[in-house]
Length: 571
Image 1 (tube, rainbow, N blue to C red):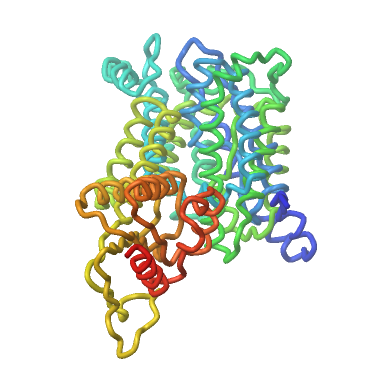
Image 2 (cartoon, rainbow, N blue to C red):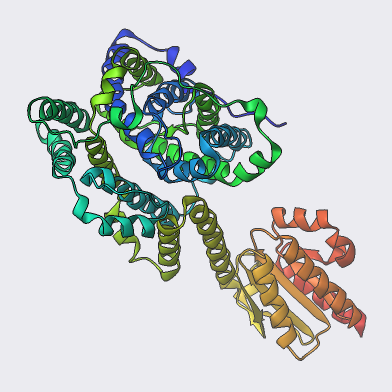
């Protein structure tokens, strides 16, 4: 009977909740909420595509952190996961908005929420974890390079008309316009990076990004008021007044089938990216608190968050590793900390949002440069280049496709390439060999030892074949090639399958062809050592109707007795 694996940790945690845990969660939630504030604003602003497209306002990032963060904590499968907008979504959001506008992004986010829920309902949470590590490193490093690339203009205060959506086009414009660098903006950006990097040396709890924003915002205001410096661009210059209200949302009634069809691929990319990042974050958190998250419940919780976020004008969200670890390091041990983090952001949104217009754009660019560096995982990237060539190929292909083209193509091609390499490895692990003359009982697991450990002699007129490994299309083709290379025609063919863990439809097809061909040539086929799973597959396919139940043997001794019986009957 099918059942949904949906057991939110929030409700089970409440059964044993106490004041001491709440005190720790409250402090952790407060700190994480403060840490999340500058990141939510920065991720929203960084998700804006090239000029000429209506930009995403910064309050959408905070709305996402509030709504999605709350739902991920309440309905997720991890005790300490903190959700919200993350840098990983920046490239895909830019691409969707550039083609379909913000309404298209809302629709894609909603669709991604449905995909995530379906993944969880179908219990595919554990399968997501098996996406090859080179792919994860490849597109994560590629995203980091992409984020850095999008921030160079604001970091240096470059001034030019027009823009470019692609990596090469952006860097071409940067080099062509290096003479337009604004010294004051560049100083704000570089000093922001310095503050973020060195703040942890003085305080582990105060987020460097928040310190940088406060200090650089004050500096920018003072420079403008008392030094007459007007070249430092701010959020207010870009977006106008920032209001503490829910932004406009999409009219879902106007959605067409063509729009949905066009957004299927981007929505699937958002879902896969969100699933990978959230489950990776949850797995890292498990190691830190000695817990075990429910991956299917986590995916359903992530799906609910992405269903709700666009309804409030938000953007895609997922579990955030940095904020989750901040939660853990500050004492958070239950989903209540994530709920408090969302409440803290809501209070800040209502009370302090209008002040955000004074934040320098170069400062936010500095925040994102640090984010991209931390995300790059360059040490892991270099370590992966020492692995087998096939893994390095997957890594580099995924990385360069992410950087030069887009994340959707990178993930699709990367996963297909990894699957092909996996099948190749499985095929190489499977082999088919011919056993001639005799079988040594000391080296066989499915053979009854004969008296004095005498070797089992293979009589004339009998051929014994051994299949090792999964019998799928790769091994099946090997088997057909081996059969075709043998010139002699025996009276009995014994096929040992004791080391075949599973068989697919192609393997069954190959066995069927072998039996039919053998019957035409007057050759009997006997199977030996078929395990229960393979036995069930062969029986269900109707293969045994062709072979005959008498020709299915438990071990090689029984198979050889059957072969000798067939030889005797044929005389």
